[in-house]
Length: 251
Image 1 (spheres, one colour):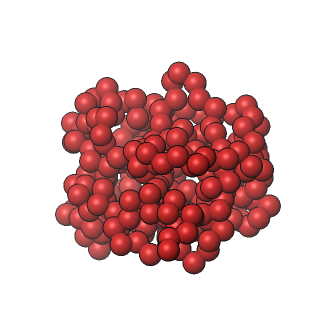
Image 2 (cartoon, rainbow, N blue to C red):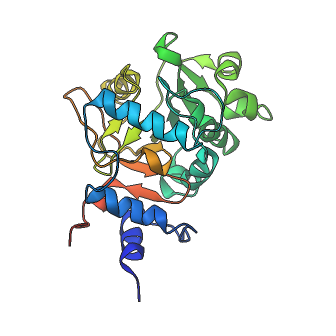
């Protein structure tokens, strides 16, 4: 018989034969936050940012010794979250992947190039616009090209935007309704708004954010200009907003 948490997992993951993760606590955490018993209660955005940064640093959830305050966290498990995304149909169907320049997404960018996908990357703070990396031109240099310095070295400025099949944005926090919390500068919102304005993404384009489970909170406060996401990957699971909307967590 399928248990309650396993049933939730089957519903929200829409898995392509993804095994149950070894830590059942991850599912309890997901269940708890939907019932608002998560320790990170909804506050104003800046208080919520400080809470998440503190939780990640205090519990050794970062891949680097550098403080994550003021940044999109480079979290432990980012590689596994990228590999989880790599196994999805959305990834496998995508010919062109867009990525923000966050360090937490370096594995996503490398995977895109290794898998032969065209990579479009936003430059830090959008100061230099957007770069395009053609996997056919950098074969064998994917590791370097996935970094910010390498992307500037091996990529080229975009003159005409290609159609984007999958968007991957870094996040500080996210909820399972698809609301996203950034570091407070608005760059991801600008990126997504620009892609929509250019007509290279649409309402059905997958917009994914890979995060540590502790970055998933009860509810992210939103404002009119905030852009949302429709897919989350963690090291253990895939969560799709269109599937989760069909599940009543309060039964």
